[in-house]
Every structure is written in structure tokens, then in C-alpha cells.
Length: 190
Ligand SMILES: [Zn+2]
Figure 1 (cartoon, rainbow, N blue to C red):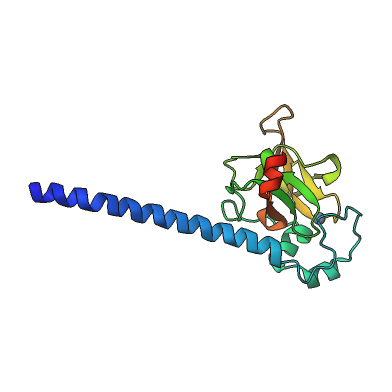
Figure 2 (cartoon, rainbow, N blue to C red):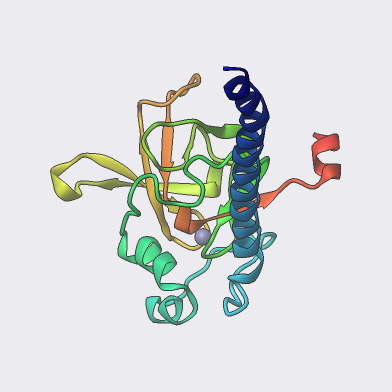
């Protein structure tokens, strides 16, 4: 018995340590993936700007040439990513979400909430004209489509079952969002 107890005392902390290490590694890998995506994916896209708010009128054939296929399919073929698969559905970084097609500022992380639907969910856009709305009667449903206010990309839908005073849930596709983390200065000045 004494030997068993000694083994338990010896191994339990080692196993716990291994678990913590694995989780840390997983988190840091996913964080790196998020950062890398935001910084490098737009090299081929001359229309991408996080400061220019002028509306874009770019032909679909041009978007198809310069956007990654998974972004184009959701943005301009109105596809939907599978739930619980996108990079932001449970992401908790502090910062701002921009349109992955054009760089338009869409949502602050302070408006993101833990929805169980499997897609990143927000209760309000970053500013009034960040997105525009369009009735969507596809698949025999009455929904409201949410479109980027600058480039017209399909982002997702808005539903009336969200938290907060307006009760809205902006249910977005991760593939058409770009997360940019707040700098230390931005956090301090908030
Ligand atoms: Zn856009």
C-alpha cells in the first residue's frame, strides 16, 4: 500500500503538468494561427484597408481571383461554414473583428458573447453603417442576411434571440472575419 501511495503522489502532479502543458501549447498554436491569418492573407488583395471606408464595387470575377476559396465561397456564394469549425466561434481574444474581404471594421470583442450555436456571435456591430441588412427567404426560412457595409460580402445572419437591450444575435462566419488584437496602449486608453 505504501508503495502505491508513493507512486500516486509521484505521478499525479506529473500527469497534471502534462495536461496543462498540452493545453497551453494548443492555445498558443491557435493564437498564432489567428494572428498569421490576419497579417498575411491580404497580400494579393489591393482593396483591403482597415482605414478606408469608401464603398467598393469590385466585380465577382476579381474577388474570385484574389480571395482564398473558403473566403470567396462564403462572401459571394453565400455559403455557411459548418458549426464549431471556424477559427473564432469560441475565440476570446480582446480586440476588433474586421471584414476578411475588405478590412471594414465590423465588431468589437466586447460585443462578442458565448453562444452555443457554433458560430462567432455578437450583440451589436462596431458602428451603425458597418453592416447592411437584406431579407433572406432562402431554404423556406424568413431570415435577415448581414452584409459588409463596405464591400457587400455575405457575413452571416442576425436573429432576435440574442442578449442585451436589443436582443440581437449576429451569427457570423469565421472565414469572413479577421481578428486584430488590441495593443497594450489601446487597452490602457479604453
Ligand atoms: Zn467587407
